[in-house]
Image (cartoon, rainbow, N blue to C red; front, side):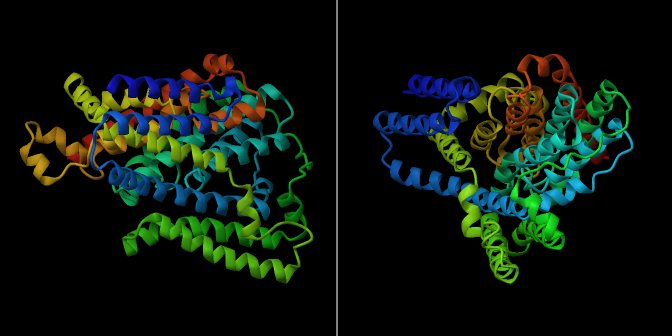
Length: 445
């Protein structure tokens, strides 16, 4: 049974990784892989509690899926009302090198609230209005990918992987920010400093005003309304960690509350401004445009990983890694580099199933208590995993959703990225890990 499960999983992964070559959505292969893995396990595993195990796995997965649906709807709503156009209008720099720094830090902090894919879409679309030279846009777009991936690593709602770890109490919001903000900033500053010298320090071009999106047109006539929805949307996203810390309820309940309040606000605004004939500004209309294929991909891949966990494969892998390396830095550096080839969501999901959060009893019974301590909630292992899985995806352009999006919009060539950007991303990756190591030494004293 185990060889069959591994063959299905590896083949499924190859198909998912080849999405841009096959031109078939990766959700297709994730769902097929999920179904086959559970079917093989059901037939050969002889587990009398398989129905209960599947319900439990589905419940854990759906918590994340419901959260993503709510968050993606809020982001789409902000864009529909022209909130992101307001950000474009307020980007100012005296030359292109300074513009790169501005865009990098906007992407970095924007992706801590939005996800890295949405941030990259918004920022790369901005480039169309800021730069006319394609090669310059490629460099800028790659910098945005690096910044968006790093920005999502230090925020509990900045990336799918951080959401997963935060929702399951592997990390807490405050400790995650405190421990990973500086390493994430370092992982951006170093490559941006080098990349800024790849372009001339010439004056920024006049803004191209051609943008056919509804949000752009709305913000031209109702700028105050765009700003209001931008503030409400961001506040709704930021409210979720506060809600979780205050009530101890799951984050998906907080995002549903925020979405409900925004729904009420937009219903009132649509009637007051008579927007029905100009745009589809109601949540009931906006929700039709969220990327359901992405939602289904996460559903399929997380349930597939749950099948491997149920079969005991991930537990055996965790034992092998510990016995072979027995070092959280080496293990997570390998995971980070793998995330540039394999999607970081299943990698993190696998680690969550491989390594349970250490308890006092586990530490007391361990032959190496100091090592086991690294796996407690907010332990060094989980912070390293969060950083490496997020930032490591930048090593290849196909290694993250942000990179794939930028590649699609700007037609960036894979080998061009490998030759010019991969080494920059790797230097930033190593510098960020070094900063985490320095922080861990400092905290010991």
